[in-house]
Image (cartoon, rainbow, N blue to C red; front, side):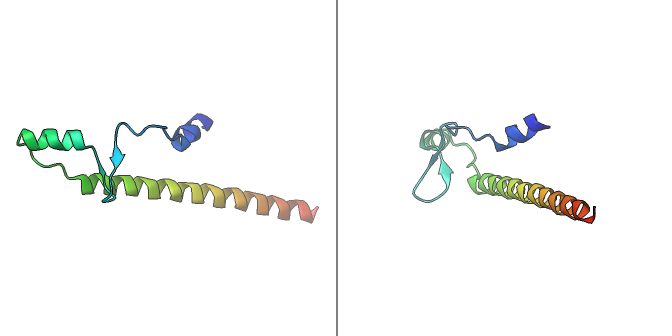
Amino acid sequence: MLRVLLNLMHRPAVRSGLSRGAHGQIRNPRFVSFLAQNNRKTLDTDFHDTVLRGRRLARQALYLIIGAGCTWVVVESARALSTF
């Protein structure tokens, strides 16, 4: 269980060659020019960014739920010890 939590909180130092441009969206200029030169379908990066944003919000919600659960256990333990 501890290994799963550590893997969730691990953030890689380098984000696989992705660069954050001035427009705020993640793009790799070499890859985009490759797609433009080969007449491929355009890549929908907005959907990818939305998925990443959703994962980040889900991870933050998980941290909030874990924190609330730990707080509840501490409060209930304190109440139980105060009755004795």
